[in-house]
Length: 50
Image (cartoon, rainbow, N blue to C red; front, side, top):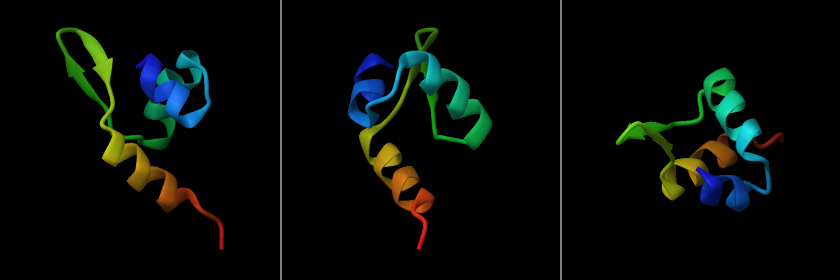
């Protein structure tokens, strides 16, 4: 999760909280929260304001 947080320039706490709140795609693997880079890119593009 720390890599995903750095990628989005956010804290790990923000990633955990907002992934639940805003539906950022996430996965649990080995009991740890994980994110896929292409899912994060897709989610960011969907958040753009025209």
